[in-house]
Image 1 (cartoon, helix red, strand yellow):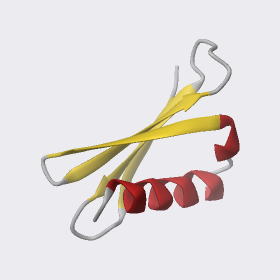
Image 2 (image 1 turned 135 degrees about the vertical axis):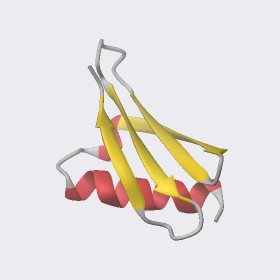
Image 3 (image 1 turned 180 degrees about the vertical axis):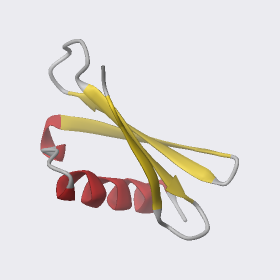
Length: 68
């Protein structure tokens, strides 16, 4: 899977869970068979971010971690 594919999976998942992904800039990084897609809010405010972890082999989302 490419970083762009991981971002698409993460964006779709986040949208289904109520996030307005147009308000965030995603960055994908692969590590140990998993993609960490970090969404940084375009408005730089505390807690305006979240992460989605996507399994590289299956393309399934393991976890969505909200910002704090």
